[in-house]
Image: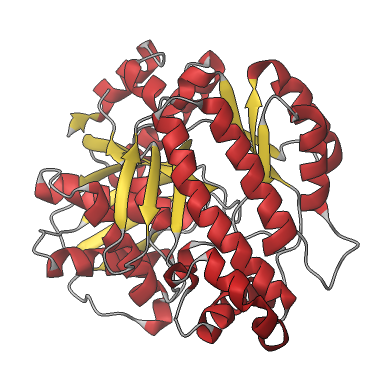
Length: 428
């Protein structure tokens, strides 16, 4: 715990500090804006709770880098923590009530003397806080009441996973305040997933929480979903001189549930015809051998999606190898290959019932026009609408962003980098 006045003085004196650089990069304008943001949070904490001491925390968003729609068939994924984050000032309040004030949202509280799921809380932040507290207590960790002010910069609906970032932020706060920081990142991620599945009411995998908790590039193998194999990839993204740009194409996500659901369903229909549950249990060769018998039973699109799964699942292995060997050009080509497979085989770039609206396709076309031979581009996340991802070299950054924002509007592009820190207590 640190004195708030002391923290404010440190931030004001030197926002160009090593802690901020690790989290947000070296751009002086970005660092200054982050300093202002921390000032707001600390002052709000002091004003709201009249406390003099607090700890500060940061939890990143995440971006899927490789393995598009592979996790639900027990495949591999590659993800990265990004420098858009949730930050918090938090301190114990010596009660059984957790008070949270998120800037821009109504404050709420959670009484942790009651730790069972409440269906009336489903889909709320309060349900996540209760679920995380419940699971931590069940696992033998100490819990307690605390006061927090949170500011979130991970946009909802951006594909950067604001909910997972929030979950592991709460886990980190409880770990620091009540457990001397003993909660390891993977357990933090598993607890967040548990809360989302059982208290929030949404089934989800483990990729989002793990990427946010661990930081940097991580790869996860879901061959056994109950015991996923998580590995941090040793690669310094900042040294490449590239930016990761996420562009929101403004597509409407309404009425896309059937589109999203069709992908795992069709992949599993191919698996079922081959007498297994998921595509991870078969090879591409087995699928090809069975194609004549499968076409009428599953349809051609399901087969093409099975082709995509096999290709992207193996592509993640090659992406990890390229990063570990510091072979960034090969990595970029594999990102392009993944995107092309999503477009041609997985067919999750635009919905079949609205072919006039193809913002994602248009953004990918513009990206190829500017970046071909010098960068990489692919659909981001679930697809059909929303965002694309691009790796952009510094000398093309202004041209790339101005071109895409000319089409999709000012502010549509988010310039990011892969940060090595996961959800952490910030030590100034």
